[in-house]
Image (tube, rainbow, N blue to C red; front, side, top):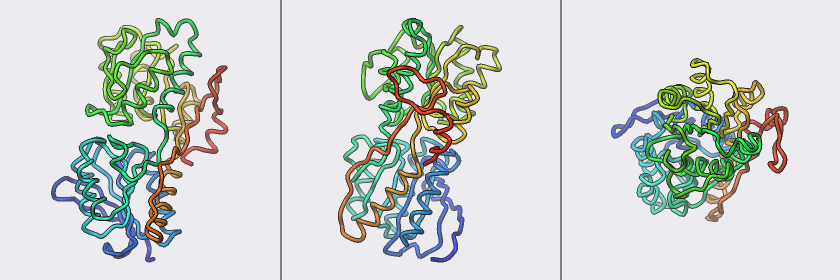
Length: 336
């Protein structure tokens, strides 16, 4: 295989950032990766694992990313390009778990193996398999940790939630509702969430999973909420941004911040006390297992079964009844 190239192009229907590895676009061993963005560190590492495993197995790798979280049109355009290029497999992190389903069906009807990573489709069976963290369990772990850490104060704690997107993709409602369940708050609708779900939730806003989005969301929440005890965040960039807004307002003291991802920067935030606990997931494993499954499909026609790629709570303040690892161990495993 020739040396890797980085090419950025614009799809006519929707601007999609594209990065390619060298090799014929019409090669029979083409495998594609489509993530939500190419800036979130989580997806950057996923792409690295994807490219490394494809190179190891002699596959041609082609990676795409939407311009921002929620760019469904960009992901549709990317799938269309991969269908036209004769791809044998697509690894997809959907921005809109439902809206992308018809395009995924088109790819599967063309004989392409489609595996979702990190974020399942709705319904999950719309893809051939899902290689991901159990996002509900990841949320449940941080919720249970926060509840145990607060003790009796958890019953009256005021909660702010920094969620992902207005369209509430699967990863969004699974983590959010997992957190509420772990914290001991009944979930009204397993596929939906709202501030009205509990009187303890004093503010909710979406963040696009970014530092800037987390800061802006928390600034809006603070305009209405006079006090916050717990912050749930969809991921660590959003958590860091939310904490920055709290600190700027002089309201960060005594606030428990929890998140999901367990990336290397996020583990540092836990170590430094910005985030109290995070559920760690493993994007390199998701990507490498996905590429291996595509290679097996090309070779034998065998389709994979879904895999829970694992989740572990990372905190330096463990509590009874909630299994966890510390930041030293979390640093060794981050991005794994």
